[in-house]
Image 1 (cartoon, one colour):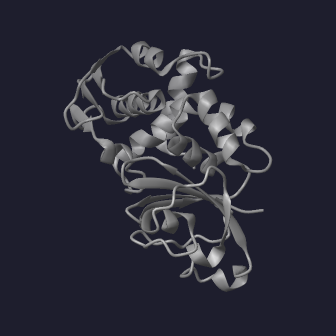
Image 2: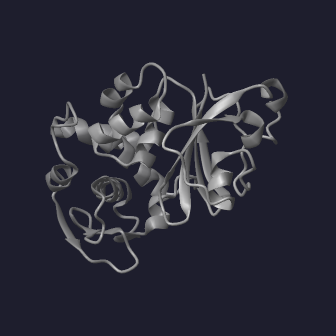
Length: 256
């Protein structure tokens, strides 16, 4: 879906002459906007931006070692600069605000939309998403665009050619979920406890490590409350999960 935030990101990429992922690093994009960039140890924050009407200082927590995460933080703060000047002089982003994918009309969601388009521009990303889905494809896309698995999966959900569900689970509870428009089942309420029969349940409640490949799971084990489930009782999905935080995993569902 095209949002004002993604349109702003597209306009910025055009203005700097971006044509392929190798053209500019996110650091160079920040410098081109006249923003001073630095790294230092931050207590209780992953990144922050201090700005006035014309310029800004972006600070990234130097304790972060995962470069794709740093890239997303920088792109997110750049989004605050272009989208939220005049609304606040300071944004300090924690792990929680950076993962705020579901709050409607929030400035954090807008900055996330901007960051996805900056790091994985539609015109460059979409042509690489044809054919059957696999998690190997997601890993290759993440590597090419130097983006996190979470951001890459959510970008694939928007632009990919195959239906997928992307679900974040913390301590066995669904915190958020997103579905491509053509995914056959869509109802998975926030706060749902994962059910027996799923890889996620085994991980949180049976203490079984996540497998290194997708495994089949029955549709009803994920979507027992969906009003369309009777039509898909014989369906199986593939489920794949990865650790993304101390208490959380990101799960992807897809089917053939």
